[in-house]
Image (tube, rainbow, N blue to C red; front, side):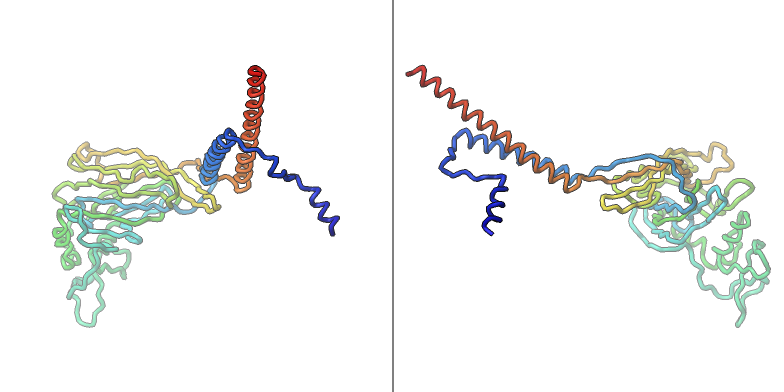
Length: 385
C-alpha cells in the first residue's frame, strides 16, 4: 500500500516548495493586482461572448408547395361603420371568400377612438313578426317561414330569411341591389336604421384569415362585393349619398407567426384621406422565413416588403371601388435564420487559457523585475564600493 502511495506522489506535477524559500516583494504585489484585474476583465468579456446569441442567415430557393398562409391584422377605420365594413379574400387559384366573419372581431368606436361595442359578427337576423313569405303572402300561424330572395334564389327551396341572406344571394349572382328599401327583410330588421345609428362612427377590425399559399388579395370595403363582368362593385353604392372616407391606421399586419427580430413595415402606419374617395392599395412581397432558436425550436413564418398606391375615384377608373386593398405575392426565395452560441466546453477552454496565460505572463514579468532589480543593486554597490 505504501508503495502505491509513493508511486502516486511521484506522479505529482506540482511539487511543493517550503515557505521558507518564498520571498515576497512590493513589485510582485503590484503585478499580482494588475494581473488579477486583467484576468477579471478578460473573464467577463468571455462570459459576455458565451451568453451572447448570434443569428446567422442563409438564402435558398423555396421548394415548398401547397399549404396555407395566415394573415393577422388589426386595422382601425375611423370613418367607416362596422355595420357596412366587410372583408373579402381571393387568390389566383380561383378561390374566393366574401364577407369573411370567422375569427374576426369588429369593435365600434366613436370619433374620439373610444370603444362603443365589440362583436364577433356583422348584422344578425332579428326575430320579426309576420314577415313576407316567398309566395308573396305574410307568415301565418303554424307556417314555416321562407323569405323571398327577390329573383336571386338558386332553386325552388332556396329561402332568404334575413336581409343578410338576400344581400348574400345577390352577391353570389353578381347582381347589384338598387332598391334595398324595397327588401322586406331589410326594412323589418332595421338595416337602414342601423346604418343611420352608426353614422359618424368608426370600426376596428381585429383577427386573421387563412388563405392558400399563392398570390392573391384581401380587402376591406364598405358593403358587400359582387362581380359585374370582369370587375368588382359594391352593393351599397346606390344608398351612399356621400363618398366613403377610407382613412385607416394599420395597428398590426403580419403574414404568419411572430419571431425575434422581425420588422413588419406596416405596423403603426396611418393614412388620412384628403381626396373625395378612392381605392388605397398595398402591394406586398411576402418572403417565406424559417427561424430556429438556440434550443432547436423552429418557427415557420414570413417577412414582407410593401409599396403603396392610391387610385382616385375622380380619375375616371370605372372599375375602382372605395376600400383598402392588399395585393400579395410570394417570393421564390426562402430566408433561414438560426441562433448560434458558444458551447460550454469552448467557454471553459477559453477561461483556462485566460487564467493560465495571464498567470504565466505575470510570473515571467515579476521574475524579470525581481532579477533586474538585483542586477541594478549589485552594480550600484560595485560603484559605491
